[in-house]
Image 1 (tube, helix red, strand yellow):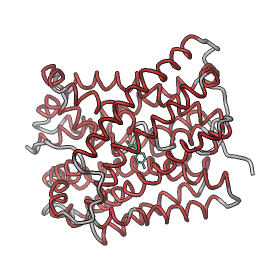
Image 2 (cartoon, protein in one colour; image 1 turned 180 degrees about the vertical axis):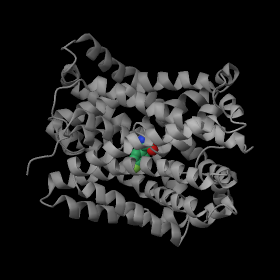
Image 3 (cartoon, rainbow, N blue to C red; image 1 turned 90 degrees about the horizontal axis):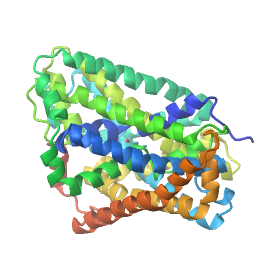
Image 4 (cartoon, rainbow, N blue to C red; image 1 turned 120 degrees about the vertical axis):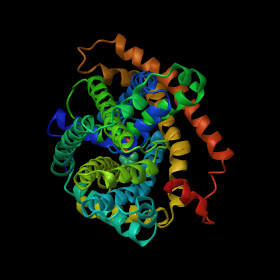
Amino acid sequence: MTRETWTTRVGFILAAVGSAVGLGNIWQFPFKTAEFGGATFLVVYLLAALCIGLPAILAEFVVGRRANLNVVGAFRGLGHPRWRFVGVVGLFTGFWILSYYSVVGGWVLRYVAGSATGAYFADPAAYFGAISAGLDALALHAVFMVLVAGIVALGVEDGIEKATRLMVPSIVVILLALALWAVTIPGAGAGYTYYLSPNFGELASDIDEIVPFAVGQAFFSLSLGMGAMITYSSYLDGDDSLAADGATIVLFNTFVGVLAGFVVFPLLFAQGIAPDESGPGAVFVSLATAFSELPAGRVLGVAFFLVVLIAALSSAISLLEVVVSYVIDNYDVGRAPTAAGLGAAIFLLGVPSALDVAWLGWFDALTYNLYLPLSVLLVLVFVGWVLGADAVDEVRKGTGGAETPAVAWLWTVRVVVLLAVFGTLALGLQTLFLEGGIVPPIDFDPDVLIRYES
Ligand code: PFF
């Protein structure tokens, strides 16, 4: 059976943007931007995304497009079968992340419906506590996985490409509409000030926290280290400039994160809600509170959570595709049953996270602090030091053959990017071991729930 390819270059870019733009952009990025010094942080983040994220995404694209194989097979296809373990780490990481991301996707589904009916309006905090763990969460986790598997089952062209062609523009249009509307609410001004006022003092005093965050966020947000970008670029067959595609994706992804802040902060400040934390609490409790108090809260709530849902779905399909692609490349099975079977397996792995938020936190802590940086590190060592000249060759395509920028990229990967990922991994391990996060939360600790609720 011939391997599928994207029908157009734009189709590939939109699918990759769909993978990149996810919960990370909406519930993490704006809040951290505000906390870490607004406009000054944006400059640091852009530098991190362009100097570290972009060379790294390019490294994954090189592996994918050159091999035209799934994340594991690619290493064999490139003539280095012993490096297949790197692909296995990526495959595992994608599988792991999707298991709990889908649980959160289920919460979001619930909030789209809850906004329409006003179900959370009476007590947003209690509502979140009630639906985020237990049988309700499990059922919606299943629904979310069915949606993801359904899209992936349709294939690269008819499923992923068609879906993301619709999803990514919808995210931008709805977010833009919400951001424009937000300008008009009384009291919104304080939100912009809080979000973007430059704060050099904050940058100087917390630089040791800000830089690693910016780098880690760039990796997670660009879906690196989970096999997604390797898999998506393996469906490319042209000779276009990978660097141009990568830069478009990095800038687009940053733009959506920034735009999300233009919706979130005016809304919160206009309602007098303190946006003092990021993560699920901010999105599901603080914003839900804002919607419950606004005159057009139901419509706005539906629009906002719909954006979050589409973003989560278009990211999730990229991770299921990683494993599906591996299986159908290697075994004589159809795409649809594979998507269904793997979707079911990922659902099962997500059961503990759906039943208990402490497990979700544990899965996420291991991802952020260990699997992701380790997986990115291995890919970079491979591309920089093993693939070397072949990688330069791939990057030169579509750029008029210029050698110097490609060689400069290679050395950036070999030294700068590798050091940055190494630092991220070291910090991650420190966090994991110092905070005891390496141990699974067998004894349910109700305090953890409070952390997510407040
Ligand atoms: N780039 C994604 C995000 O920012 O949310 C990362 C991701 C997470 C992709 C989980 C896919 C996924 F299932």
